[in-house]
Image (cartoon, rainbow, N blue to C red; front, top):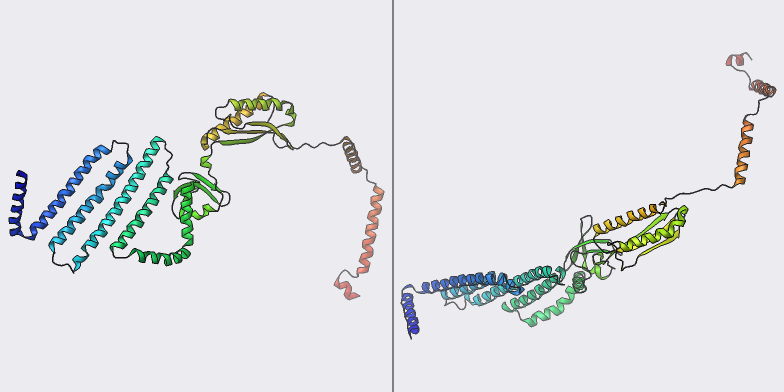
Length: 417
């Protein structure tokens, strides 16, 4: 056969050259084969990329992006190990005895690298496709699955590496039985947080981007990341709050991001003088809410006279908006309150404010007037001059009597005495 003859001629020519160059020819041949295989794989992947980038399958894109690096690394590891074995074939008891073990370890690490890249690429592609097609998968679920798969890959890689270095699986199991108890006691808080994170991933009480708050703890903000130990919550003052995952297993949690409507519940105060217009105002407000496109008429709408306040008649306005966006909700609420004021003015009524009225009986008014008159007359009474003069004389007499009892007025008089 012509093909067999060509192969035989090539083998004979290679044998003649090897007799001249010896082992260097083998090394060059292996190196050339490694380089050629590397270039062929790169070209094949480039051609594959042109086909897979237009497909809807998420696996082909992920495999292309993940294989490109680890595949070339595996080719070079195998090629270099073959070249080392060719260069030193007569050293079975020396350091070359560890060459198969080192090669196996390198291939295990490359396989772990490949698995991690596939997991990351598949997760990214799945999220991008879900965003365009409105699928139910979200960032939290994808992140949880990616973390679980990474843990599985790490465990498998660790077992393979231990087996590659000569550690028996039975010895590892024996150590894990005794050491696992000690590690469990020492790191029970860490394990509690890990199981708390697993509970979050399974029950999904919230996702990344949700606004959460807890009435039991001072926790309120937007979820930024869910880790295995803690969850990062960005507070509304833009400060990060790192909450251990175990906390969410023991507290009541509210997720306002999953609300379906926002509630409007306001009290409108009217004067008691406008009591006759209350039924018409209540009816007009109800019709206005029913006709408002921003208000969900399928939900509860209440407009009633709620209570008789100390200074006003209190009307209850209770309804739900269709939107859950905070800005749009405030706009709808503002429109509702302004139109309620217009309705009140159209019915010749007025919004009340806190006032107090004091009612005084007529009897108290008469008594107060008589007392004021008597006091005015007393202040206008004429003064008696004789009475004033007699009081002055008595005061002067008391002063003289007091001076006589006190003695001399000066030291000179005292010395003369």
